[in-house]
Image 1: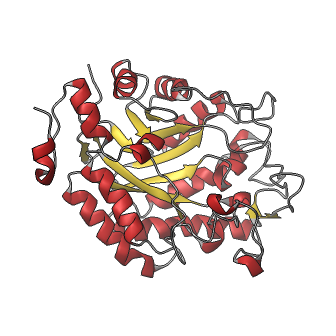
Image 2 (image 1 turned 90 degrees about the horizontal axis):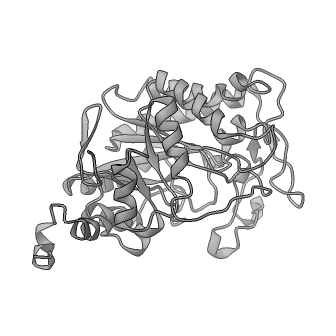
Length: 358
């Protein structure tokens, strides 16, 4: 029986346990560049024993940032400092991953602690906010610009180029962000995609963009390194024209056939009328359903806060990994703590050995 500290083999990589640091936006970059904050933030979680540390949503082009302070990987100059981060993570026995993202209609906002309001170009934002259809996030905001076919092809190319840079930067896992109401999620959901061309209408058309992104990334990403996709398993909207769990299961099966190794199973974030009732492990059933019905590895996310809860998810086969965010903000050394509580062996950094429970 697998448990939280069982190793996990995916392609050529062996992850030392099932604990993953979720991508968490830090809004601490200038012009997309990583800096000492990212080194310490990500590096400390590797020191803390996580098997995989995934860098935050990293924009594949400048217009794809949520805020002007997002991490980016749209130019070669971004690579050098990212190499410093990946090297440190790997020195700790962890694996460095990166989430590639485009914010779509949720772009050009201020940082959360500065209000999250839409920014004009004069305020540091940008002119054209792109989306599958000209549907605003809310009634008080302007409509985004509908992507042309040429612009869709350019975004696909941007994901491909970003994946190539990620490989040069030393990352060993890529996660494509297809959740939380950002561009790829906007395309798959009928609530935000009202196109009438080959990228709208039917399920196959609405999911064409994300499949093209996966295929483009695969052209430059080594076949022996893992590729993940984060999906919002449901829009949380009781409307037959919303994105539902059964849609995610079908898409996950298709992505598996394209070479995707694991689905990071989140939910929501697409429309303000969503009806979410969060609670401990509230998204774990999505991971279990996709794992069982699509036959693909999954990661469970969402209010996973204790070692017993995380271990239970793995032991009962609900998911193959637990992908943890806020608890890692509270405790960068969560795996060390969890191993002690679960009486499982774990390697401590030699610099910290004196504090290891006996």
